[in-house]
Image 1 (tube, one colour):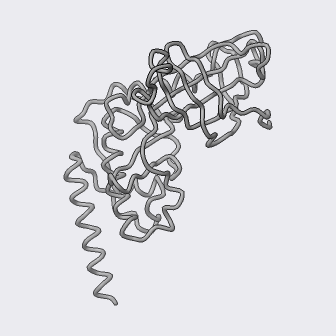
Image 2: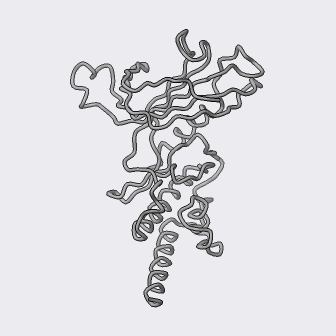
Image 3: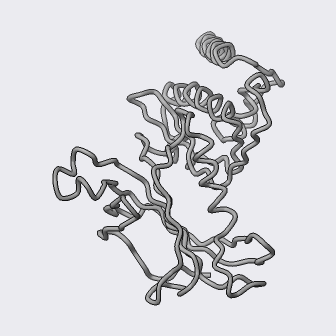
Length: 263
C-alpha cells in the first residue's frame, strides 16, 4: 500500500494545553497492524517529524522560554478494520509504544514521553471516522548510527562502550527491543552517550527485578550490528554494569595491543 500525499511540515497542532510547531518530516512508511477486541487488521501510515513544543500560556508571550525540541510521531489509519469496519479503536502498537515510553520514564537512555493525543479523523482526513494518534517525545541529542561502519575504529569503540551503558539502563527498566537496527541507536559524540529509540517494537516485562539484569556484551553488540559475527566471543554474563564495561574495555585494550604486535 502506498502512502497518501500529505505533509504536516509548517503546521501548528493544538493538542490540548500544548501547541506543537511541526518541522521537517524525517520518515514516512506504511505498516500492517493488528487490532484489539478481534477488530482484525488495518494499514497504518507512520510519519516522524521534528517539532517544537510549547504551551498556550507562553505562545503569545515569550515562547522561547518554554520551547522543547521534540519528535512527533503521527500514526494514521488508512483503511477500516477487516473484521469491524466501524470500529475506531486504535492499533495495539500505538498503545504499546505509549506504555513503553511511560515505563522508560526513569531511563536516561531513551526519549521521554511529553504528550500524546488520539482522536477520530475528520471529514477532510484520509479515513473519516478512523483513528489518528500523535505521540510527542523529547528530541535526544546526536545522530543515528547509519554511518557507524564508516567511523574510525576509535569512535566505533567509543560507541560500543556508550551503547553497553545505555543498554544496561534500558534493560533495568525491564525493556527488550525487538528491532535492533543501527538506525534505532542515537550517538552523541560530545556527550559520549547513546540513546535507544523507536519503542513501538519493544516488550516490557514488569515482573523482572533489578537483580535479574544480566548481559553478555558480545552477544548484544552482535545482535545490534555493532560488531561482526566473527567477533562474538564465548558467552560471558555480567550482573554488574561497571564490571561488564570494565571487562569489555580491557578486551578492547588487549586486542589493540595484539594488533600492534603483529604490525
